Length: 325
Image (cartoon, rainbow, N blue to C red; front, side, top):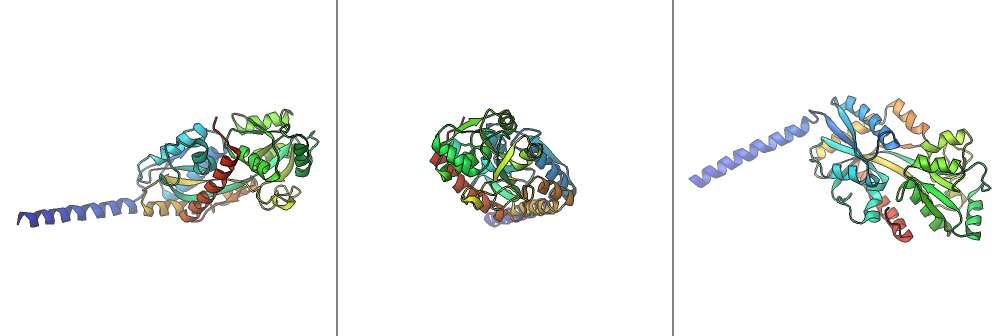
């Protein structure tokens, strides 16, 4: 009899737990959401995070608090997301390097992008543009390749640090063109661009949103773009693909992520809110004006992108034997 009573009590407890959990998910969100940005305030990741958080906050009817946790190439903030409670109240921006590069580059991350994080949705992708100083003798990619082959290890390129999209774009170019150049890393992309304008380095692969003001002001000259097709913002600048380097395709990207184990119902609700936010005309106009492709889609779509990019850039890092700073 006591055994039957215990079974009955356990069944009642289990019945009480399941509806409560289900209700918590259906009632989500019922308090503010923390949004982690793994980079410092004022940069591209930070500004886009704040823009998308503002739109999603209005849709979900709860505050979304943006919290910058920069450092270690994006690893600190991304690890914080990975180790947070999987309840939907800590999400964040998953970026190109910490999601697809740093596992191979650092080798000893305290989080695994594949097993510790859940993709929610892609926010955007953006090509980079190869730029030189206006006084540079190099006017085409062919000019650069010819010069690099004539004098290996003489040409230089700047970047915002080891393992970022500035750096890896140039490494991918080197590997596909069969040339060797010298990498000059800076603490930020803007510092690398400033030194290019000063004539201290030969070239740089820069984000379009960052490079466009200086291109328009004739402070730097665009040579080629890393998307498959030409950009509407630079219709006279060829893509690497059309000039014979189809594998030199680089799209810096970022999207929303959550800790692994976050319930599917919550992931789906966040995905729907983000997709709705990405339809906002003001946000779309801003993203397109910066040369970016607007994201969206399902969590599975974003997961597939992360996996493919991890394979691609892991191979580039290994081939070039890139080591962290």
